[in-house]
Structure formats: C-alpha cells, structure tokens
Length: 345
Image (cartoon, rainbow, N blue to C red; front, side, top):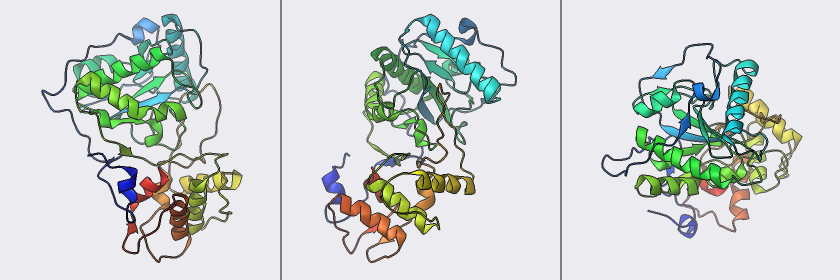
C-alpha cells in the first residue's frame, strides 16, 4: 500500500512498509506473467569478441537483482549496429587489458541505438536457459547476486535516447521473465556501490523503468523502495551537513558547513578504506575519482538510532534533516535506519 509523505511524518516519524535493499527478492508468481518476447541479442561471436582468458563462472542458481549501469562514455550520435559492436569491443578491451578481468565485466550491453549485445561470454545461452547465472564483474562485492546491463552513454545531466530506453524495457522484462525477478528488484549500480552510475537522470528514471517492465510482464507495479542518497564533490545542502556531523561523530575533523569539499571527500574515502569498502566505477570514457563519494556503502557505517533528547553529533545530523523539512521531533519517536533513509530521500 502506498504511503504519502504527509502520512510518513504526521505526528513525528513513522516507518513505512516499503521494501529495502537487502530484503529477499520477491519472485513473480507462476501464472501472473504474460509472455515477454525475447529481444534480439547479438552474441560475442557476432560482434567479434576476443576469447575469454579464463574460465567463465556459471553459478547453479538465478540472480536476485537486475542492475542498470551507464558506460559513462561519450553520448555518440552513431546509432548503427556497427557502432554497437565497436562499443562492445572497446569495453572488452578496457576490462581485459586495463582492469585485468578475464572478459567483459557486464553480462549485457545496450547501445544508444537500442542494439543489445552479449557482454561476458555465455551470458545469452545461460539467460535463455533461465535457471543458472553467469557471474560477471560489474558490481563490486555483489557479482554473485546480479545480472548487469551497461547502457552506452553518460546520463548525469542528459536523458537516454528513446531507442535505448525502449530496448532496455524489453530486455529487462525478458530477464525478469526468464529468472522470475520481480520489477521491484531492478536496481542501479549506485544501490550497491558508492558510484554515480548509472547517472543522475537514468537513476531517477528507475521507478519509471520498474513500472514499464511490470506492464510488459503483466504484473502489478511495484511499491517504492528505500535507498541511500549519493553525495559528491560540489553538493551543498542539508544532507551534506548531516553527513559531516556523522563523520565528526566518527572522529573526523571537518566543518559541518553543508558544502561537500575536499575535506569531506577525504574523510569519506578514509572511512571507506578503513572499512574495506570497494569503489568500482563503470567502464568510462572519462576519468573520475569516486573513492570519496558518499553513498550506499557510506551511510550504514555512520547512522545509528537516535531518540528525542539525545545529544552529540549524530543527534545534530538528525536535527539538521528534521529542521530542513519543517518538522518536529515528537518526544515518543525514534529515528531508526529506515527513517534515516526517509529523511535523506
């Protein structure tokens, strides 16, 4: 049942029943889904892939999540299938030669012209079977759980072409059908790692993608999911100020001025390093240091339950977010992890 923002905060803080990342996947019930046509997927042989230089791991189970990426490269205006093949070769070369992987990291690639190609070898064969999972290398620490789609382009400030969007909807619906993955389990790369990927605009369209995929599969549209925000250099708002108070609570010396500058970036990076957090940006036609971005791997290390009357830096972080919303902290309420996510949404 959908819960309005007004209901969420009426009389203090109330936790809603939205699903959270990390909860068990909700499979599509047998008999609910309508048949989704298999999209045209060009195989590694068709686009001229190099042979993998190691064994492709095929897990004897289905993936849990479908993950959307962007390549963070050029927004090309060549929408031909030949260009799609060239992009696939460039990604494979980068992943094998620069990152030292055995093959392309993602299972599938979607070009700006809407042409879908196989990424890691055997991905199409295994996907069509619908019972096993080719393990890729596109989401650090979660590759056994996910099947990833790289979407050609950079979508931080521009939208995706319609052809790419249409092919993405069809492809994700087909994956969902084959593996019994519900539309609610469509995620962005930044839902697992502190990265800008798949770009602010494409990430912002994921609720729309879930609805479109649900319609294509013939299943109910999913409820909203909670997530942690991504903050990066240049951001200036109450979320940054709350982050700075939380960092101060963990012993980092910096001003809580609400501006994400070099000192905040450095503190987040040191926090990640101290906790063994991996930063893994996507294939990129640009070089961006994301090691100090605050995201899904950062916030859980910092937040804790806060009650009315608490003092200290964590309480100040909560008060900053409450004040920014013009709300009051009712004396009988607590801010637990889901409520932190609602405040930061």
